[in-house]
Image 1 (tube, one colour):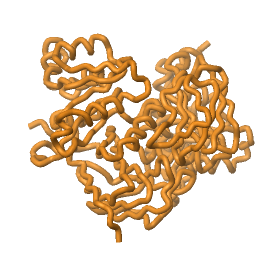
Image 2: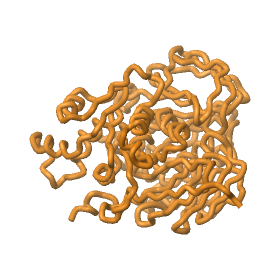
Image 3: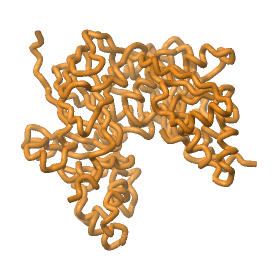
Image 4: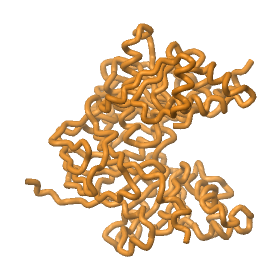
Length: 273
Length: 234
């Protein structure tokens, strides 16, 4: 019945490297909240790595903590360790990054783009613009963008970051935390979401942020929707469960898809030989 | 969600009714004694005992449940009801309780962060009970609904909150919203996801006014100083 193109989604970026020989090409943006436990995995496979302002503090302070067996706390070794995890770019309004962190990465050759004159866009916005204009993005069919640290903390920050998904509907952006991921399902497409059940689920939801949905239809969920209306003030699909390995979603409205990330299977210890 | 010091100390003392939604009881049991490191945990747990524990009971620990049952907390097991969230169930209880009056407010901690579908479900509770004053609180901020049916005056306690704030049209776009008292006021301004929403705004005056054609979420940051337990001990 529907003549819409299908958009296929998969969290293959959460898979360890030997399973992603033809994996998704993505850029990683690190924002200023505690790093999720799978950050080293995402970092290693990213084609481009950006820190949004204080996100650089998080890499500097917290990344060594994921490798307790390395002698990462001794200053000299810590330096050597951090060199392995050097961001390509630090961009933002620079009101959160520490001076010592900034100096460290400048010395390593990280490109620093100070946008403190621009108070109209969020740090995540600024990073997305950089990625969209980068030559890497032009050369490929477009990089997916993974962002950590966009959720939690101040709610106005979180809302601003969710709004970024709505403002760039043609760019695949995934917001990630320790507990879940969020991505936009634009109304212009039918969606197929392939579930990596060892890594994500079963808890999921479809959230009509921004505008109500007059009709949404799904398959593969415990509580599927069938031309169902969803709106804040009424029904929204939360605490749902994935039942099948493939979920389909079709809606008259842009929706946020969210799925929980499992607590096991993604920490460093699971991948050290 | 992680509990935070000031709310539990101040609000546990002044609240007229104290509920734990399911695993919220684990938090009170485990984390409240940590705010009083020099006191006996048993004494603290007794002093900060909930009146009611309600929810689907899939998170509360057995030892925690037994402790509070023994000490007289009313436990309402709603595990048969999978259609409403734990926050929902607690709000229904409060609305039906004899203590509920028009001037009452419901303060909820732990509704934000964690799984996003949980957070969205909790935000939806604000929209589903627009005639009940509900405030969601975390270490970083508070959120409340400003129903479109009213003009709003928000009195800012600047020693405790701000300056960062926002107005978020979560459910429906707003064709025109007007404010006063903010750094970047709105003047019959349109707000929508996909376009402009008011985030990283700043409170400038002690009274903020908001009028809108749409239900909005008001959010303001909570200051990091001035609120821990130590600040209030005599």
